[in-house]
Length: 182
Image 1: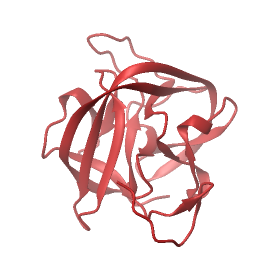
Image 2: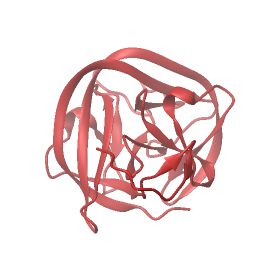
Image 3: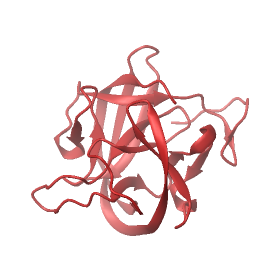
Image 4: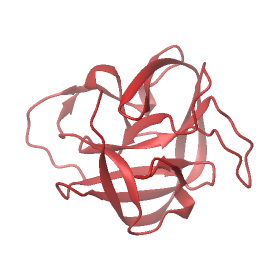
């Protein structure tokens, strides 16, 4: 169980092409279930399932587009892993509201795609939390009103669900250290 907070979008920028990672899970996901992803250990935003029809994609209720290859993924027990390290058969926490369930991964799909970087400011502490996600209508983050918001429709000032954390990790475990992550 985690305590989610609210973060306001303060910057959105297209940053070019890179390797994006989709996780295909072996169970059907609710439209607002998702994974906690982030560029740094400072915190995470929730990428939700592709459980909706868009202009370019049919629904894929088993898939979460988890963003860039380098992303942190919050794992069970508060550990993190890089998306680059995630393998089929691993179980990942799928979040809905403040609870999670562990679901095995059936396939990891990596493809070159265009990306946007979204920077948010957590409202209580002003801490910055960011993600780098595919610039596509199929990629959605969980908004503060508990609805899925397409990343291509985000605007400065929009509010998203976040999970603030403390930076400082070694092999996925929290450690106390002086660290600067941007």
